[in-house]
Image (tube, rainbow, N blue to C red; front, side):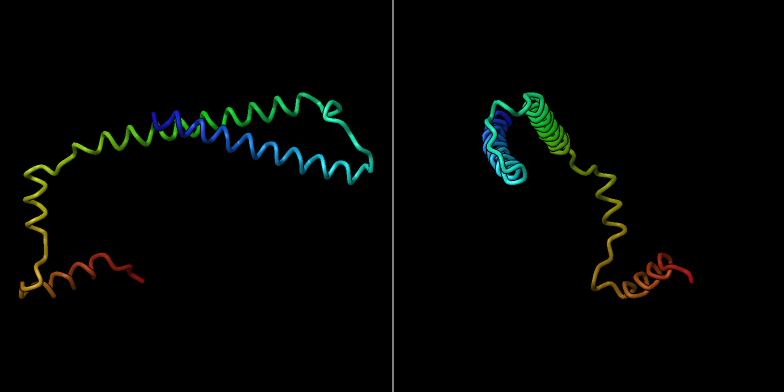
Length: 115
């Protein structure tokens, strides 16, 4: 439902921008050639190519949205297990621990780059 409304909105935006681009292109061409051209003189291949590009872009965006939704649904039920919670509690450093400074120093030495 959200994807459909997003796709409709994207199509509207793209259609407005394509019209603006066409108008700008027409102005540039008129200025360069100093001739007025009608819309019928432009090739229909350009229109078809642009339409295909926009359709491809819309499909790509829809696929990204679907992939994102799937990944979000998969991660909703991933609560930590009892073993993971126990491991976290064992490795957590408490501020009031008298050995906290020593453990932090040891950890920093272990992970620092050796020159």
